[in-house]
Length: 160
Image (cartoon, rainbow, N blue to C red; front, top):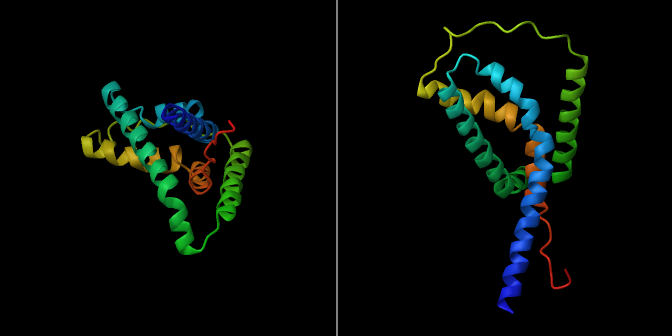
């Protein structure tokens, strides 16, 4: 009997993780963000770029995790409903997509190797802003994380 309960809990956990990953991957779009990341870190060495990527991944994970667990309570405190956040997040994603479709081609990248700080503190600052917050964890992923936190999938009963 106890083994069936553990299996149900593991199945519920796996379902929740797959739902979160499936919902966040299209919004975060790691393959689409890779060229942007490479362009923004062109002045860094390979080891600094790897260290920044690790830092961005950890920052993004912790930020999304905090949004899943605490975000709905913060919105409730300020009186904002989850459907309002869902609609606003969707509108922001649509507006960003529309502006990308209608924007003029970007000018060629400027060599900024001498101007950037490749120190540990400079990499740490750049890893959170602008790499983590607006680029990786943007309005769409914030909306998805809040929605998943406020509406977790129901636990599977014995009828599964």
